Length: 434
Image (cartoon, rainbow, N blue to C red; front, side, top):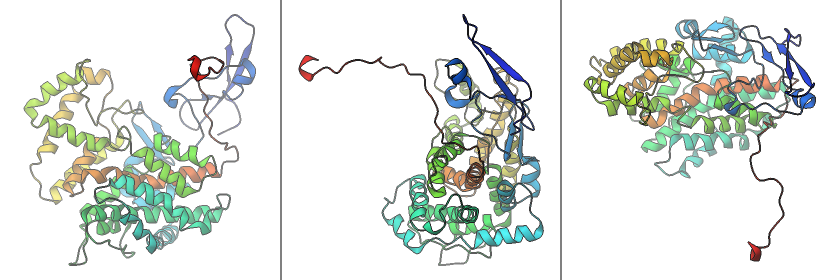
């Protein structure tokens, strides 16, 4: 961020002559932000912002979102162009390095990632320590956190080469760890990665192949998976990314930071939304029930929510949702699914909601989760793996954000303040006098 202020904001304490001048710092796009770092020193007060919805905790060059206009840019490139023309590994290079790669750089990056797809053989034993019915998110959270015990040769966070190697290892190994978590839940043999395949192809291979017979990756499904990964690669300072940055600000190793991000993503309000959409559509059951369902959503006394609509940031149509909708039709056509009840129901529900004054006034538009669950279900992926796939994609965003933070000379340990509302100081009372 430029250190040159684009004006200032003056704050005056009521009933006093004390004022504070807050510099307004500009970004390249979007509103200027008031620098409040000296507010406490000047006026003796902090700011109060639950959920940090109006607070910038860092400056970043990676991702920009304009929620009102429905814009998502990665390093300046629109998500629509990247999803249509790019590949996940090319987007990963872009997020990490700031520019799209040349042919030579892309080949070198691809080799760098694929050379790290194997995991230490002893990590296989970790899976046996989990119950067979353990949630895959619990498994990958534990296994990713344990990577630092096996790859401690490159954990100097102040060494640029170590940061680069850690980035390669995480991007390469998380799909293997995730696929093995799925295989473990099925009781099937683990499939080792194949470096002759592309990133998404290799992931589908490890998920679906068995040693007993050959498995050929469907190129349409591989492209759909690659696009899903692109659409989930990074999304600015969301809850899990902020968790990674907060953990990283302490100097924790990158494996621990990404494990923290996975744990944060596991929350149903963050990474589990596409699973909630499927449950909602199943509960509606038929398009004839949509009016009753919509009425319940509007009822303030009802706990019924319209899942897959609305977003903390977007107050317009999520640009990723349009791409996901088109991808959904491609996958169902390829699989020969002509009449999918869930898709038909989703389309009808979307049509009604987009023309209802209630939802229009509240700016509740479809988000990326509305169609992604239908795609994954059609591909035979169980709902328990939906958030895992999100974690596979978001790993590159997390490690890019972590790397950017580590290279920021102004980076400080995260330490939010609070409004204390408990007891004032009081004296200890012996137990016999209570």
